[in-house]
Amino acid sequence: MFYYLYEIFNINLFGYLTVRAGISFFLAFVFSVFFMPKFIHWAKTKNAEQPIYELAPKAHQAKSKTPTMGGIVFIGSALLASLLCVNLTNAFVLLGFSCFLAFVCLDLLMTGAKF
Image (cartoon, rainbow, N blue to C red; front, top):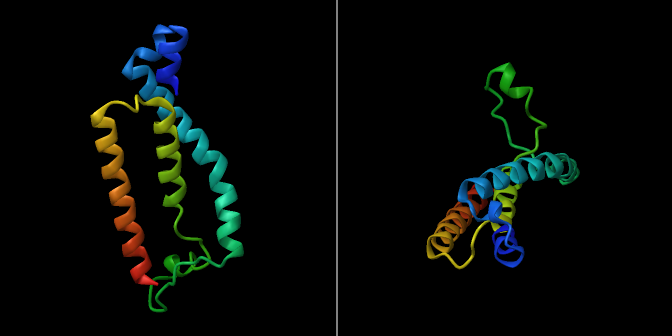
């Protein structure tokens, strides 16, 4: 999106890759900070908890009610921020997104196999 603002309004600042990367990093951080509390609340209502082995140390057992799968928020934030800042006609960007999504699908398959 920001790259297309460069083309439409001729704002030269958005044409630089480093500026768009910085904006993408900042947006991903803001999205994570905004969505993580909502996700934690949702996960607690769904009882998405990591099982803790009963012979684990006491410090680990204290985390027994901690929701899992918070990485989904980070993945979604990074993907959304990247989509807002990249040139979607670049073949390397599309290849990067396809690899990113392939690893996300692999992770979801592996996580689903545990439950």
